[in-house]
Image 1: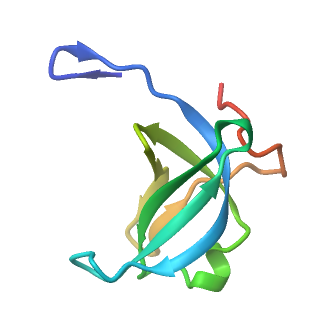
Image 2: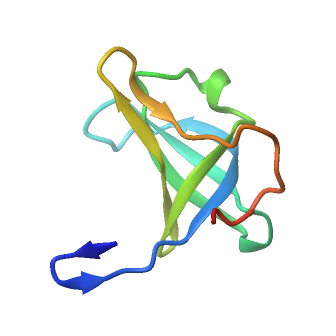
Amino acid sequence: MQLSGQVHDLELLVGRIVAVEDHPGARAPSFLLTLDLGSQGRRDATFPASTYSSKELSGRQVVCVLEGDGASLLTAHSRAKGLVLISPESEVEDGSMIA
């Protein structure tokens, strides 16, 4: 991906959401998620609390981008449904690389 004249390598992995908590310091209602990335350890991510409930998120595998000590979840922006999480079609090992 090229941004502002610089080339950045993105590290995309499958992670499992192992903890979901309300994020009280966020500007809009959000969850603070803990992701298990297998051998890559655990990372935190935030996610808006508008599309999914905490029960729907807990235990779910998602595709994420590593960013320093944190991570971001990959989503599709649907006009009808809002943010829709990108997930593997079948269960894979937590920490699996996206190729």
